[in-house]
Image (cartoon, rainbow, N blue to C red; front, side, top):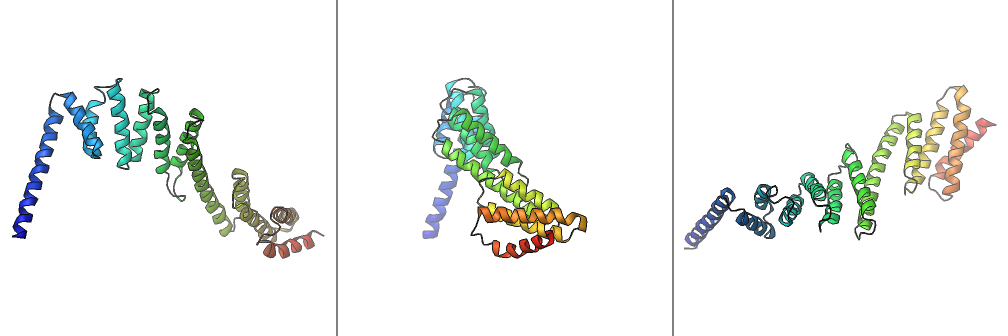
Length: 264
């Protein structure tokens, strides 16, 4: 008896869903744009974003330049955002700003365009084109809306992206160090210090510069050793000055003493 009741409910549900789909198809193919608009809005507001997009795609051009057109463009962008298609969401948030620069969602769309690009930024090991693009868009948002309540969040997102780029650069520098390409490692770690002066990892970068200079000097031909040992001592002194309690000093101090002995 229970199985029969379940079967009846299943069939009834199928009929309702199917008839609903058929009804939406009829509206989409029909001539009544007002009905299409209201149906699309109802679908959007009920959370059926993919189905709503079918109606919005048909109507945006028809209502372009009107209040309804503005709403459709914003809703289209948000449909893609809600369904996590961030590339298309970013595109339509950008389109909204171009078509309705004084619209009530202009500031929000500028932020969400940048935020969508931020969400497409990959892990540090991969190509960072979208990371740089997101940084550009977030900075553009801050420049355009310096008094926005979203500036603090945009700044935080930029900090996250800079940290990701720093991690990528560190991995490259450390790879050079592991490969015993000490000149490239030193240059890369120095670039990290220059590019990320407020980094929490500054102490670590100074350590690797000093260590790389020592090994580089030790493996160099005699005519090159003096200059490289001098730079090792200088790097060690920089670390000692900035981080007098650094955990790396115990390892580097005897190396610095060896370098000084060589330079006497």
